[in-house]
Amino acid sequence: MSTQPLAAAGPQFVVKEPWRPRRRGHLRGADLSWAIAFILPYAAVLLGFVIYPFGYALWMASEPSLYADLFADRLYLPTLVNTLLFAGLGVNVKMFLALLLSGFFLRPRGWIRALLAVFMLPWALAATQACVSFHWMLIGEQGLIDGLLSALFGIDGPLWFNNRWLGLGSNSAAYLWKWLPFWTLIFVAARMTIPRNLYDAAEVDGATGYRRFIHVTFPLLANLYLICTLVSTLWTLGDFATVYLVSGGGPAGMTEVLATLGFHYAFDIGNPALGVAAVMSALPVLIPIAIVLIRRLQTSEVQL
Image 1 (cartoon, rainbow, N blue to C red):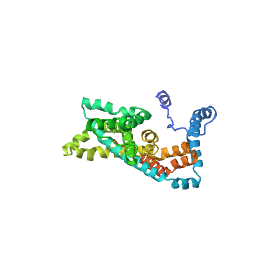
Image 2 (tube, rainbow, N blue to C red):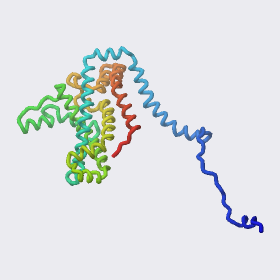
Image 3 (cartoon, rainbow, N blue to C red):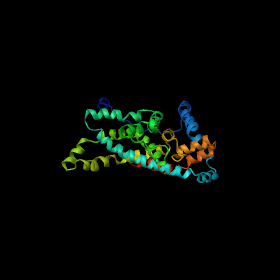
Image 4 (cartoon, one colour):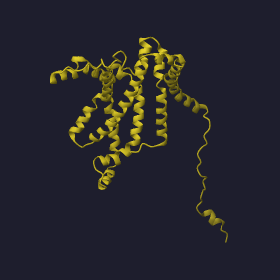
């Protein structure tokens, strides 16, 4: 008996070839036109607002004699010290306080949540309004601080902007007042992602209070803390509004930072090249920070 009819009557199976992704090739025709149409606006913005201004600034500040003039100016070295103090102390104090306050604002109490809303107000204000408000709080007997000292204790407050160190302190205090709420909110959000069972396990092992913070909270937030510190340092080194609107660089330019000194050279003295050179002199600090930040983002994860 032949088996050919049975084979013909049975189910037929079609063997399909395994799926293989299409090879990537060059775009052609309409695909190429659409790709150019989407990329061209971004390329134009990048060229017009990033590459060209930065390249032109580098060209303006490429003359070696500009840096000789910078170091010869009596304001440059004090300004460099002011910038390092303003950024170094301000960023580290701000981040440390933000990390501590984030634990306080996580407590499940109604009045603490209401206080958090009030605490966020300086950050919610525009930088101009916040810094000008702080300036008027410290301006002589008409200011809020000196007025309270006179009314409550019968003493005359200091002239905050007639002394270099008081002026620097005022700038740093305004900077903390403005930006501390933002970074506190970042750490509050980060703490909320930590699983509760980790704290329960630590409590079983006897880690309570500050030990729980040292052995559980901070190790989990260490990567985020470092990245936030680097980003904040980059922002602070270029901060112009705080110093310009709070102390105005006084007295006699002794509380200037590099951003405001460059503005002074470019617009008050009328030497834009020297102003750009003053700002560009911060690149030896900015570039290593940017490299470390990029490498940190590429080689490690922000674990919460």
